[in-house]
Every structure is written in C-alpha cells, then in structure tokens.
Amino acid sequence: MVYWHHSTALQTRYLIYRIIAGERKRFEEEKMKLSALIGHWGLESGEIRQIQDCVWEVSGTYILKAYERLSDLERNVQIMKVLRSMDIPAAEVISTSEGTDYLCSAERCYMVTRKLPGAPVKDIKEVKKLACQMGQIIGRLHLAFQTCEEELDFWDNSLLSEMKGWVKDELNKNGWTVIAQSDYENAVSSLEHVYDRLPFQLIHRDVHFGNFLFQEGEFTGYIDFDLSQKNIRIFDLCYFLMGLLAGEEGLRPSTNEWLLMIAETVAGYESQITLTAVEKEAFPWVMENIELLFASWFTGISDLRCAEDAAKLFHFVQENETAITDTLKL
Image (cartoon, rainbow, N blue to C red):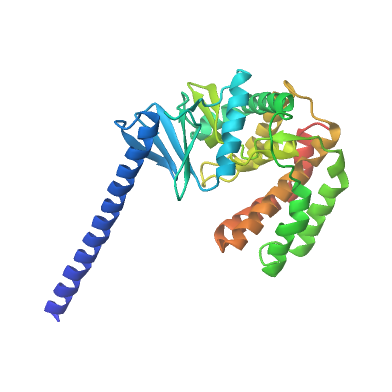
C-alpha cells in the first residue's frame, strides 16, 4: 500500500511536469511566431510581453493586438486615425514595412500601435477622486465623435431593440431563473417610454477605467474602440457608473459614495455637453437594462455567478431609482 501511494505520487508529479513542459513549449512556440510576425514592423528583435489575452507589449514601446475579426480591427484603426487628426489622445497606428495598417494570418489579424503613456487606474481611492474628470473625458470624446461620426462607418445599434430581442429570448429560454419576467418587463417598459427622446450618437460602448489611461492623476489617452457603435449617448455614462459597482468586495464604493460619484461624473460631463431632462430621468432605467443585458449574456454562456451578480446590481438600482434621480437634481 505504501508503495502504491509512492508510485501514484510519482505518476502525479510526472503528469504535472508534462503539463508544465507542454505549456512552456506552447509559450515558446507562440513567442517565436510573434517574433517573426513583428518583423513585418521592423521589430523582430523586440522583447515581447503578454499583458492581456491577445495583447502584447513589444520593447516597452509598442502594443501588438490580435483580432479574430478583421472588421473589429478596421473599426479600431479608423477611429484612432480620425481622433488623432483631431488632437484627441488615441494610439498611433504603426504601418508595416509593406505600408499596410495591419497583417492577417490564417487564424488572426494583427495591428501594432505606439504605446500611450500612463496606465489604467486600479486604486479605489484614485477612482473616487477621478469621477468628475472621467465625466469631462467622456464628454470630450462624445464631442469629438459628434464632429467626426459622419466620416466613420459604424453600425447603428439600439439598446431597446437588444432588450426586446436577444436579451429577452435568452432570459425566457432559461425560464426567468435569474431575473423575474415582471422585473424585466417593468424596466424595458420604462426605457421604451422615453427611448425615442434620448439623443443618439457614436459612443465608445466599453467605458471603464481599463480603457482610459492616467499618469500621476492626469488623463493620457483613450484605448480600445472594439465595441464602438451608434447608440443612446447616456449609455456610456451609465455603463461607466455601473462598472464602479462591479469590482471585488472592498474595492466598491458605498451607496452614498457611488451617488456622489454619479453627481460628479455628470457635472464633469455637463462641463462639455448638457444633458437633457429626459436623459437624466432615464439614468436608472438605462442602468437597469444594462444589467439585464449582462444577466442575459452570462446566462447564455452558463456563468451563473456573474449572471446573479448582474441581477443583484439590477435590484440595487431598482431600490435606488429615486436616490439616483434626486442626485441628478431633476
């Protein structure tokens, strides 16, 4: 029996060793492939460091990003070039030695940009200080989008259509286990009541601190326009504010802190663009529908924990509708 345990332990250790060795081999193979790839940008001697899934830093100066869909890459290239032409801090697209903006292999498409200074803010103390500034930053981006959106080819999306389409279908398919059907219907009905009066324009669509760079408290650049689309403009503000509540326990603001951050973010935004009274009235309904969207998405990929987290945020906004609109001083 002792021998059997010893033998099993050796087999387990050998299996772990093989797994680690296999992972190391795959890593080295990918690194060699990427090294050859970046040669098309004259960077073949650059040190490669993975910083996110499908994103690598090269020599501390450039960013290599991989895309499954060429259309997503082209959208990013297009918007970054237009924003830079307007002196908006977006990353510079680096051309290949062949003079193209990107390179495609059989599996993926790649582009290289010059790394912007700064980094995403992660410290909750800093996050609380930056609410007003983030409002200004989102407002300036929206102003730039208003100026250039006719030059850009982006799809017209509708939050309301999504809610009445795939979001409802997914929640219904799963038997309304995460969100009650009555809660869904009330939230969508409230949004529908004002939807046609909400200003519509090109938006970022993925506004969170991970996509905005800061250095010593100063904003240094916008990144990641993969999801940019035309939609209701307060989507960006509501998405950003809900994201502040989605962090880990201990890294989230209290209810009162969050309400203050709403006021400060909107004040910053309105230093650039004045929101309509209807937009301010719609804040809680847009927030609720964003969380319904997340609950449906996570349900669809069988991530029950994240779906339940989205449902909790939905109910939190439901319970604080009046406090939110009071904060906006309607």
